[in-house]
View (cartoon, rainbow, N blue to C red):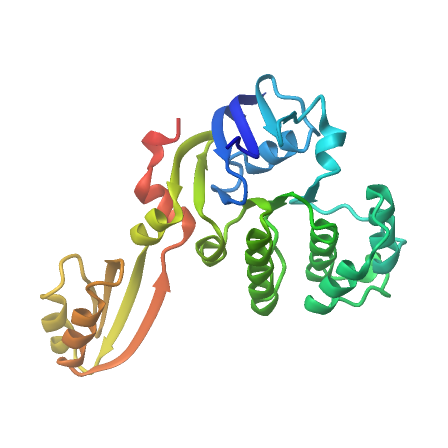
Length: 298
Protein backbone atom coordinates (compact mmCIF):
# COMPACT_ATOMS: atom_id res chain seq x y z
CA UNK A 1 0.00 0.00 0.00
CA UNK A 2 1.46 3.35 -1.04
CA UNK A 3 1.63 6.13 1.57
CA UNK A 4 -0.89 8.94 1.23
CA UNK A 5 1.71 11.50 2.33
CA UNK A 6 5.45 10.98 1.94
CA UNK A 7 8.53 13.16 2.29
CA UNK A 8 12.11 12.25 1.42
CA UNK A 9 14.92 14.51 2.58
CA UNK A 10 12.54 17.49 2.66
CA UNK A 11 14.55 20.63 3.37
CA UNK A 12 13.77 24.34 3.50
CA UNK A 13 16.60 26.37 5.00
CA UNK A 14 15.83 29.96 6.04
CA UNK A 15 19.26 30.41 7.62
CA UNK A 16 20.34 30.65 11.26
CA UNK A 17 19.09 27.10 11.88
CA UNK A 18 15.52 28.06 10.91
CA UNK A 19 13.46 25.84 8.60
CA UNK A 20 13.24 22.06 8.23
CA UNK A 21 16.05 19.70 7.37
CA UNK A 22 16.06 16.23 5.83
CA UNK A 23 12.54 15.20 6.82
CA UNK A 24 11.70 11.58 6.01
CA UNK A 25 8.25 10.31 6.97
CA UNK A 26 5.30 8.46 5.45
CA UNK A 27 1.63 8.67 6.43
CA UNK A 28 -0.47 5.66 5.55
CA UNK A 29 -4.02 5.76 4.09
CA UNK A 30 -6.60 6.26 6.82
CA UNK A 31 -3.99 7.18 9.43
CA UNK A 32 -4.17 10.14 11.82
CA UNK A 33 -0.58 11.34 12.04
CA UNK A 34 0.41 13.82 14.74
CA UNK A 35 3.14 16.36 14.02
CA UNK A 36 4.43 17.69 17.31
CA UNK A 37 7.07 20.08 18.52
CA UNK A 38 7.72 23.37 20.29
CA UNK A 39 6.93 26.70 18.66
CA UNK A 40 9.47 27.41 15.92
CA UNK A 41 10.29 23.74 15.39
CA UNK A 42 9.20 23.85 11.74
CA UNK A 43 5.68 22.41 11.83
CA UNK A 44 4.05 25.19 9.81
CA UNK A 45 6.94 25.28 7.32
CA UNK A 46 6.41 21.56 6.68
CA UNK A 47 2.66 21.94 6.19
CA UNK A 48 3.12 24.87 3.82
CA UNK A 49 5.43 22.72 1.70
CA UNK A 50 2.87 19.91 1.71
CA UNK A 51 0.28 22.39 0.45
CA UNK A 52 2.61 23.59 -2.32
CA UNK A 53 2.87 27.15 -1.00
CA UNK A 54 6.64 26.88 -0.52
CA UNK A 55 9.15 25.19 -2.81
CA UNK A 56 11.64 23.00 -0.90
CA UNK A 57 15.35 23.69 -1.31
CA UNK A 58 15.93 19.96 -1.68
CA UNK A 59 14.15 16.66 -1.18
CA UNK A 60 10.56 15.92 -2.10
CA UNK A 61 7.03 15.80 -0.73
CA UNK A 62 4.17 13.87 -2.31
CA UNK A 63 0.47 13.53 -1.51
CA UNK A 64 -1.64 10.87 -3.23
CA UNK A 65 1.38 10.17 -5.44
CA UNK A 66 1.51 13.78 -6.69
CA UNK A 67 4.38 16.22 -6.25
CA UNK A 68 3.36 18.80 -3.65
CA UNK A 69 4.85 21.76 -5.50
CA UNK A 70 4.57 21.06 -9.23
CA UNK A 71 1.14 19.41 -8.90
CA UNK A 72 -0.20 21.53 -6.05
CA UNK A 73 -3.59 22.42 -7.65
CA UNK A 74 -4.49 18.74 -8.09
CA UNK A 75 -3.55 18.05 -4.47
CA UNK A 76 -5.39 21.07 -3.11
CA UNK A 77 -8.57 19.93 -4.88
CA UNK A 78 -8.54 16.77 -2.75
CA UNK A 79 -7.25 18.27 0.50
CA UNK A 80 -8.90 20.03 3.40
CA UNK A 81 -6.49 22.62 4.81
CA UNK A 82 -6.59 24.63 8.01
CA UNK A 83 -3.70 27.13 8.31
CA UNK A 84 -2.04 28.00 11.58
CA UNK A 85 -2.63 31.71 11.00
CA UNK A 86 -6.00 32.64 9.58
CA UNK A 87 -6.34 35.43 7.01
CA UNK A 88 -10.03 35.69 6.16
CA UNK A 89 -11.82 38.30 4.01
CA UNK A 90 -13.23 40.55 6.71
CA UNK A 91 -16.15 41.97 4.71
CA UNK A 92 -17.80 38.62 3.98
CA UNK A 93 -20.28 36.95 6.28
CA UNK A 94 -19.52 33.43 7.44
CA UNK A 95 -22.12 32.06 5.01
CA UNK A 96 -20.64 34.13 2.20
CA UNK A 97 -17.17 32.80 2.91
CA UNK A 98 -18.41 29.20 2.96
CA UNK A 99 -20.10 29.73 -0.43
CA UNK A 100 -16.91 31.34 -1.77
CA UNK A 101 -14.73 28.39 -0.69
CA UNK A 102 -17.29 25.89 -2.01
CA UNK A 103 -17.38 27.62 -5.39
CA UNK A 104 -13.59 27.50 -5.65
CA UNK A 105 -13.74 23.74 -5.04
CA UNK A 106 -16.69 23.21 -7.38
CA UNK A 107 -18.80 22.03 -4.45
CA UNK A 108 -22.53 22.68 -4.93
CA UNK A 109 -24.03 20.72 -2.04
CA UNK A 110 -23.63 22.73 1.18
CA UNK A 111 -25.56 20.36 3.46
CA UNK A 112 -22.33 19.13 5.05
CA UNK A 113 -21.28 22.72 5.75
CA UNK A 114 -24.62 23.43 7.45
CA UNK A 115 -24.26 20.27 9.52
CA UNK A 116 -20.78 21.33 10.66
CA UNK A 117 -21.99 24.84 11.52
CA UNK A 118 -24.63 23.29 13.77
CA UNK A 119 -22.05 21.00 15.37
CA UNK A 120 -19.74 23.90 16.20
CA UNK A 121 -22.59 26.28 17.12
CA UNK A 122 -21.52 28.69 14.39
CA UNK A 123 -23.77 31.55 13.26
CA UNK A 124 -22.79 32.13 9.65
CA UNK A 125 -24.77 35.35 9.33
CA UNK A 126 -22.14 37.33 11.23
CA UNK A 127 -19.44 39.20 9.31
CA UNK A 128 -15.96 37.77 9.67
CA UNK A 129 -14.52 41.04 11.00
CA UNK A 130 -16.88 40.81 13.98
CA UNK A 131 -15.99 37.22 14.82
CA UNK A 132 -13.78 36.29 17.76
CA UNK A 133 -10.65 34.21 17.23
CA UNK A 134 -12.49 31.09 18.36
CA UNK A 135 -15.40 31.74 15.99
CA UNK A 136 -13.04 32.30 13.06
CA UNK A 137 -11.37 29.01 13.95
CA UNK A 138 -14.73 27.25 13.78
CA UNK A 139 -15.28 28.83 10.35
CA UNK A 140 -11.92 27.51 9.15
CA UNK A 141 -12.76 24.04 10.46
CA UNK A 142 -16.06 24.00 8.58
CA UNK A 143 -14.31 25.00 5.34
CA UNK A 144 -11.59 22.36 5.80
CA UNK A 145 -13.99 19.48 6.45
CA UNK A 146 -17.10 20.37 4.41
CA UNK A 147 -16.08 18.66 1.15
CA UNK A 148 -15.24 15.36 2.88
CA UNK A 149 -11.70 15.47 1.43
CA UNK A 150 -9.44 12.45 1.09
CA UNK A 151 -6.66 14.26 2.98
CA UNK A 152 -6.77 16.80 5.82
CA UNK A 153 -3.79 19.01 6.73
CA UNK A 154 -4.54 20.76 10.02
CA UNK A 155 -2.17 23.26 11.64
CA UNK A 156 -3.07 23.80 15.33
CA UNK A 157 -6.76 23.20 14.55
CA UNK A 158 -8.19 23.81 18.04
CA UNK A 159 -6.38 27.09 18.72
CA UNK A 160 -8.88 29.43 20.38
CA UNK A 161 -11.58 26.79 20.91
CA UNK A 162 -13.15 26.14 24.30
CA UNK A 163 -13.01 22.60 25.80
CA UNK A 164 -16.48 21.67 24.51
CA UNK A 165 -15.58 22.60 20.94
CA UNK A 166 -12.21 20.88 21.26
CA UNK A 167 -14.05 17.71 22.19
CA UNK A 168 -16.35 18.05 19.19
CA UNK A 169 -13.30 18.48 16.98
CA UNK A 170 -11.83 15.22 18.33
CA UNK A 171 -15.11 13.43 17.58
CA UNK A 172 -15.08 14.85 14.05
CA UNK A 173 -11.52 13.67 13.38
CA UNK A 174 -12.40 10.17 14.59
CA UNK A 175 -15.42 10.13 12.26
CA UNK A 176 -13.24 11.19 9.32
CA UNK A 177 -10.72 8.49 10.21
CA UNK A 178 -13.52 5.90 10.23
CA UNK A 179 -14.55 7.18 6.78
CA UNK A 180 -11.01 6.49 5.54
CA UNK A 181 -9.61 10.02 5.38
CA UNK A 182 -5.92 10.58 6.07
CA UNK A 183 -5.26 13.31 8.66
CA UNK A 184 -2.00 15.19 9.25
CA UNK A 185 -2.39 17.06 12.53
CA UNK A 186 -0.06 19.64 14.07
CA UNK A 187 -0.94 20.22 17.71
CA UNK A 188 0.21 21.30 21.17
CA UNK A 189 -2.70 19.58 22.94
CA UNK A 190 -1.64 16.24 24.38
CA UNK A 191 -5.21 15.05 25.00
CA UNK A 192 -6.13 15.90 21.42
CA UNK A 193 -3.16 13.92 20.10
CA UNK A 194 -3.73 11.03 22.51
CA UNK A 195 -7.36 10.62 21.49
CA UNK A 196 -6.98 10.96 17.73
CA UNK A 197 -3.52 9.96 16.49
CA UNK A 198 -2.13 6.56 15.55
CA UNK A 199 1.48 7.76 15.38
CA UNK A 200 3.29 11.00 16.08
CA UNK A 201 6.40 12.62 14.67
CA UNK A 202 8.38 14.73 17.11
CA UNK A 203 10.10 17.73 15.52
CA UNK A 204 12.86 19.69 17.22
CA UNK A 205 14.74 22.54 15.56
CA UNK A 206 13.49 21.50 12.16
CA UNK A 207 14.67 17.90 12.42
CA UNK A 208 12.81 14.72 13.26
CA UNK A 209 13.72 13.50 16.74
CA UNK A 210 11.48 10.43 16.49
CA UNK A 211 8.38 8.88 15.00
CA UNK A 212 6.48 6.92 17.63
CA UNK A 213 3.18 5.09 18.14
CA UNK A 214 1.00 7.35 20.28
CA UNK A 215 1.01 4.65 22.96
CA UNK A 216 4.73 5.30 23.45
CA UNK A 217 4.11 8.93 24.36
CA UNK A 218 1.14 8.00 26.52
CA UNK A 219 3.23 5.57 28.57
CA UNK A 220 6.12 8.04 28.82
CA UNK A 221 4.01 10.93 30.05
CA UNK A 222 4.27 11.61 33.76
CA UNK A 223 1.92 13.36 36.17
CA UNK A 224 2.61 15.44 39.28
CA UNK A 225 0.64 14.80 42.48
CA UNK A 226 0.85 17.42 45.23
CA UNK A 227 -0.52 16.32 48.60
CA UNK A 228 -1.25 18.54 51.58
CA UNK A 229 -1.03 16.99 55.05
CA UNK A 230 -2.28 18.13 58.44
CA UNK A 231 1.23 18.35 59.92
CA UNK A 232 4.79 18.73 58.52
CA UNK A 233 5.79 15.50 60.30
CA UNK A 234 3.13 13.58 58.36
CA UNK A 235 4.36 15.12 55.13
CA UNK A 236 7.93 14.06 55.92
CA UNK A 237 6.85 10.50 56.82
CA UNK A 238 4.97 10.18 53.55
CA UNK A 239 7.78 11.65 51.45
CA UNK A 240 10.31 9.22 52.93
CA UNK A 241 8.58 6.39 51.11
CA UNK A 242 8.74 7.96 47.63
CA UNK A 243 12.02 8.52 45.83
CA UNK A 244 12.38 12.03 44.42
CA UNK A 245 9.50 13.45 46.47
CA UNK A 246 9.78 17.23 47.05
CA UNK A 247 8.74 18.44 50.51
CA UNK A 248 7.70 21.99 51.42
CA UNK A 249 6.26 22.28 54.93
CA UNK A 250 2.97 20.32 54.77
CA UNK A 251 3.06 19.81 51.00
CA UNK A 252 4.68 16.90 49.14
CA UNK A 253 4.98 16.62 45.35
CA UNK A 254 5.52 13.24 43.70
CA UNK A 255 5.93 12.67 39.97
CA UNK A 256 4.80 9.34 38.51
CA UNK A 257 5.27 7.97 35.01
CA UNK A 258 2.16 6.06 34.00
CA UNK A 259 -0.58 5.06 36.44
CA UNK A 260 0.52 1.63 37.66
CA UNK A 261 1.90 3.00 40.99
CA UNK A 262 -0.95 5.42 41.59
CA UNK A 263 -3.05 3.12 43.87
CA UNK A 264 -0.06 2.59 46.18
CA UNK A 265 0.64 6.33 46.22
CA UNK A 266 -2.93 7.20 47.19
CA UNK A 267 -3.03 4.46 49.85
CA UNK A 268 0.23 5.72 51.38
CA UNK A 269 -1.04 9.30 51.43
CA UNK A 270 -4.30 8.28 53.11
CA UNK A 271 -2.34 6.63 55.93
CA UNK A 272 -0.75 9.99 56.75
CA UNK A 273 -3.87 12.15 57.14
CA UNK A 274 -3.82 13.83 53.74
CA UNK A 275 -6.09 16.90 53.60
CA UNK A 276 -5.71 17.96 49.96
CA UNK A 277 -4.59 16.79 46.52
CA UNK A 278 -3.72 18.65 43.32
CA UNK A 279 -2.60 17.06 40.06
CA UNK A 280 -0.95 18.40 36.90
CA UNK A 281 -0.06 16.53 33.73
CA UNK A 282 3.31 16.83 32.07
CA UNK A 283 3.19 19.23 29.12
CA UNK A 284 4.26 18.16 25.66
CA UNK A 285 7.23 20.53 25.89
CA UNK A 286 8.37 18.92 29.15
CA UNK A 287 7.93 15.47 27.66
CA UNK A 288 9.96 16.38 24.56
CA UNK A 289 12.83 17.54 26.75
CA UNK A 290 12.68 14.39 28.87
CA UNK A 291 12.43 11.93 25.98
CA UNK A 292 14.68 13.52 23.40
CA UNK A 293 16.59 16.31 25.11
CA UNK A 294 18.63 19.11 23.60
CA UNK A 295 21.37 16.72 22.49
CA UNK A 296 18.97 14.96 20.11
CA UNK A 297 17.62 18.14 18.53
CA UNK A 298 19.95 17.71 15.59
